[in-house]
Structure formats: structure tokens, C-alpha cells
Image (cartoon, rainbow, N blue to C red; front, top):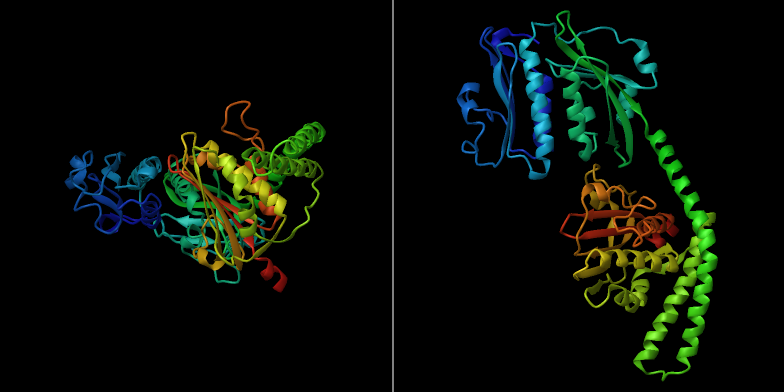
Length: 494
């Protein structure tokens, strides 16, 4: 980084300012500062000319919203040794204000460090040491002045850039980062640029070309010149996907062991209760007229008790992990056959709407398992609407190619799928709750009113049928669960 022409260049800030603007959905993000004693200045902006003519021209008005019509302005003063200026984000998305505040603060700190530094050398040119490509972890370095980023071959492999020449642009890494993790990576990089001390670790996800997701731990540290000012960021990338999967499998195995012990003791007692219910229902049916409303209610009790008998087998299946017998079923027929029961589950306060796509196609699944999946989801939907609402059940078809961009959270192999959607107009969920809903025993219901197994069972049934489940929910705007099942005729063709 040099002060030739009284302008300090920073390729690193130029890249991160644009990335931060896109991540926080801001109309503009900029860093503008100068050092009166040296005449050096620094400007990084997106879009170009977003910062205004000079730092002093806009600084007095940054606290108000009268200079821009884009909404809220988040601004931080840049303070250093005789350094003045501002870092700002204009009009960030309301849901990303906290991220914007943290990132703008780090931009200001980084700019102060850069203006305080003395001239330094350009990005070094040297022979690449053999250990970089032989190491299990990937090595990288990012020159602060030029913005040139150099990767070892192992880093490129971890970022899914195989059989390519060595890349020097940060987009080789930043474009691969999962959209939900990008802000955290930018925070980690800026923190490493301004902090002195041990390397800074940060775990994040990257999305590969085929849509699969891996988890990497980034370790970054600032390499300084003789005066202690940062020249470049250097760091490593380590793939921890397998370790995280082992941790998840271990937690699941421990939870399943607990579930199995409960299931083994509960199944026997539950069957005893069902025997009494079935027996008295048969007796009552013999005492009423077949066309009476009471007979219809008794038939529903008989039907539900038969389904509950199958449920006891499911409890033992959870304990022993037996593979269910899958047949080719039509989801339209399953939903239509359950509609009367589901309307009873929904109750009188809410409305059940079914929209079935004609000729949606068959899937390979266990019809009884799909019954339980629907009952669990409809019960949850009803509980989320204590004042009433609408529960919608839909079937449809889709092609995995319709997902388009590879960074979409739900990742499916290419092919034809039949979708089963259960949607409600209830209270919805925040991000924290949504991230945990499939954990065994996790529940938001009061003690004694929920086991925390309903949605775990739903995901288990979906995945053991070869499908994937996706959840969309917003507080106050309801929840939507979408199950994607591969078409059975497609599986046969393959």
C-alpha cells in the first residue's frame, strides 16, 4: 500500500465494501477518510460516487436522514492519529441492521489502521513453497493494497475449483460462501485485519457446483510490516464437514437411544388402552343405527384407533430402526382418503383446504407413514392457530433444475419430484426456533403439552422415503412445510 498521489489504495476494502452492500441489501456502502498531516486519503465505495465529494462535505449530516432518500443511514466516524472520515451504510435492509452496524464499525477501524500506516511493499512475488500444496489444509493470502488473493491448490480443491490455474481473485472464495454465512465471514476478515494477536477462527458453509454443502473453518491473521502495520491477511481453510456430521450423528444416536427406551415401555401399555377403545367402539356400533350421526363418529373412532395401533409399531421401529416396507403410492389418494380425519383434527375453529395436482405421479413410500406425517403437521398447524385460521394441503410436481442458483438452502439432485405441502396461517417462527424444530425433544409448547417428537418424526419419515423437507416461516405470517419425494417411475427408469 502506498501514498503515491496522496491516495491510499485498498483492493481488500474495495471488494468487501461491495460485498457488504449486497449482503446487507444497502443502497450504498462507503469508507472515506483523510489524514491532514500527510495529505493521504482513502476511498472505497459501492456504487461509485456513493460517498459524496469529500469527507468534510457530508460528515456533519451523517446523523440525519435528510441527505439520502434511501432510509436509515448507519455511520461510524473514522478516528486515528490525525485521521478523519466516515464509514457508512445507506438504507440497509431492516432485518440486517445489526449486521450492518457491526460491519460498518469494522470498516471504520480498518480504514483508521490503513491511514496510520507508513508506505509498504507491494504484494510479494516468491517461489511457492511445496508445503502449501502438500498440506491437508488450504493456505491463502490476501494483499490489502492490491486486493490480489493467492490460493494454494488445496484451498482451490476445498472451494471446488479443481483442475484450474491458480486464481488470484477473492471471488473464487467469496462467491462460494453460503448466503446466510457471508456477513459472518466479512466480520471475521475485517476483525483479523485490525486485531493483533492469535489467529482468528470462523466456521462457515460453502456451496459446491453440484449444490452440496461443506463446512470449512477459516483461520486468518494479519501479517504486519516492521512498523506493525498490516500488509496482508494470511490464513488457512480446513474442511470440518465430516467432523460436524459425526457430531450430529452422535447426538441423534443418543437421542434415539432415549426414545427407544421410552418407546419400548410405552408401546405395551398403549396397546392395552387401544384394545379397550376398539372393543367398546365395536360394542357401541352394535347398539346404534348404521345411518345415525353417532355411528359416523364411532366409525371415526374405530378408524383412528386402527391408525394408533399402527403407531405402536412405529414406536418399536424407532427403537429397532427397522426399515419400513415402501410401496408405490399416489399422494393424492393418500390425502383424499385422510381428508375427513384431518378435518376432525383441524377442529371447528379452523378451515382445511386441499389442492391436489391431477396426475402428480407416484412416489415410493409407506402410506401409513404418510398418514402419520400429515397428522403430525396438521396438529402442529392447528396448535399454531389458537384463534382459528386456514390449513392448506397441496400436492404438486417440480423439476430440481427449477432451483436455479446453487446457493439455495434446499439442495436436491436433478430429477422430477412430487411435492406435498402443509401450510398454515398461524404464529410462524423466528430463525432461532426454525433452526431447531427437527431436533428430538425440542418443543415450544408448555410442559406437558408437547413431546418434541412430532417434527422429528416428520423429517424421519420424509428422509426414509427418499425425500427432503424444506421449511419457510415468518413470525406472524404462518409456516409452510414442503416435502419433496422423487417420482417412483423416475426411480424405476434409473
